Image 1 (cartoon, rainbow, N blue to C red):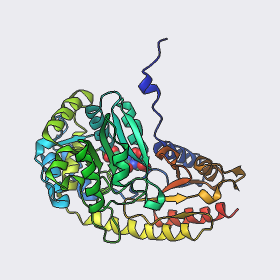
Image 2 (image 1 turned 90 degrees about the horizontal axis):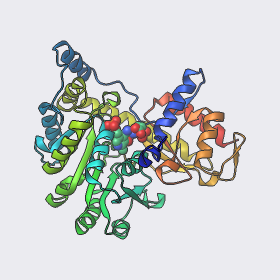
Image 3 (image 1 turned 135 degrees about the vertical axis):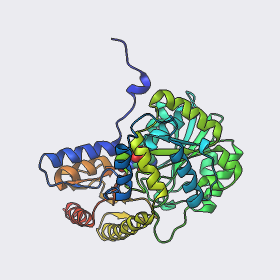
Image 4 (image 1 turned 180 degrees about the vertical axis):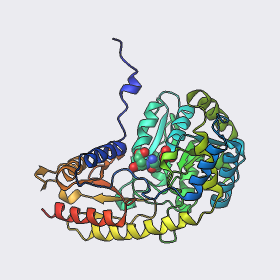
Length: 396
Ligand code: PMP
Ligand code: GLU
């Protein structure tokens, strides 16, 4: 038999989703396992959003929609971006797809030619690196150390640019670090992007989940020049606890939106009609549920931060947003935990899952070692139990 595509054969399965599948399988097998793996809000989708979906089905709204999304949803996105981020778009600049992950995939397919370089700060969300390669691009990874709060500087970005650089991709606030770039830091990065004529993919999906009164600045809001070269990625999964509905969106130049729409018209057409109608309600309806969830996440972040830093041998920085925390296990390297010699973060995560019955994500797949990502998108009860198990496991 002839070989399958070299690009496809090289794609690694998502480590976050792999951990999640393993965790769910162990649970189904009757094991008392605690999960801090895949990051998805543990809250249910609010009732007003569900009602909009029931109504859509009852009203017979069950047909295809325009391939770039229903006009009401693209208008709702425009209104929300204006209200929350102070950026003005028109509906023809908005593309709706089947989850923000799908939007990222399409954006990369549309922007990259084989061999184009994409600058990617590590630690990064695992999907970026693979989606860049799936589009024939080459990820150029620059490491943002913990000592810099996992944020790159403008001079690091500048030094990584070559004649082949097409795009800079980043996530603010960040999965996996939870750190937030402030406006000054963003402006410095934006200057480099303009100087070298780069596109920017700014994934802002956690923009509503910020703590300690931190203020969010959308990359596109910095100037008209930066807005023209920026693709904002966002969606309803995190903000409205709608991960299973699969609705994401981009805002970009009208030209890029047109090409992404053409691409989608062959790839998938529009996402589920029912989900799009539910997303209109999410974006246009009452927003108080978002603030309630944010407060709960903030209390959990405070708790998990205190507990991790109280355990000898491990530590973490206090995240500004999202629902992740990066646990530093450098001091445990060389120790034996759960009968396994810990040489790296993969060893720790496997031994902790098998012998401590807690699922978390090794950051090897995020471009750095000796860190584990925990999500606090889990109930306080689960977090307490997980922290107790962590204390016992590390204390062995
Ligand atoms: N971007 C980031 C940084 C994420 O963590 C996620 C979560 N899966 C996504 C995009 C995609 O979200 P979704 O496809 O559910 O909209
Ligand atoms: N974004 C979440 C995470 O990083 C969900 C899983 C995924 O899609 O990667 O855990």
